[in-house]
Length: 265
Image (tube, rainbow, N blue to C red; front, side, top):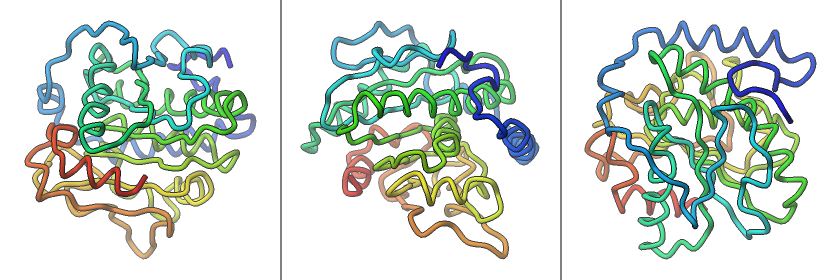
């Protein structure tokens, strides 16, 4: 695919109108943004490409499949949060380092998206990138049919993961599509909210790790998905990690939280 991550050209034929409508609804639902708090969680730094962490960078369009790790048994694709595009590789490396301390030996890759601008603009870019990432993953799956694919989105990276699941929409099955401190809206996984069928059809499990001590996350800070007269798919699970996570920035630094994630691998 050669679509630009900041456009809707990566959408599948016939899906553009429905996709745009869903995104408009979600943006309205998230209009009360705590921009300064999100931006100040971790200062962004410039991170060079690691020899071990491959970076799949969508900031200038959809990258080639060869940018991803090829021929691996298992890959976790980590999507960073708001203001952290310059720190994407280091963010993924933090998860990998702590996961390896707990015995996890899988490959970790960094998904980088354009988080420039105010939160509303960045959220739109996250949604567009998720859709482009879905197409990239389909191409990656075609070239790596035996690789177990897991997604992990932190904060606004949770939107990237959710939109990727929507874009895949049953074309193949992810092992995991997980989020931590997700900035996706709390109704997103609910029946009738736009993602229910995609979650049910596109992943073995979606786990949303939330903490009552995290007042920035939208999908989780109040106890997980918030559904009115509906339910979440049977393969969707809210996981309370409040005892391990004291703030929005603590998920990947907490062995207890990392262990909870690995327990579902």
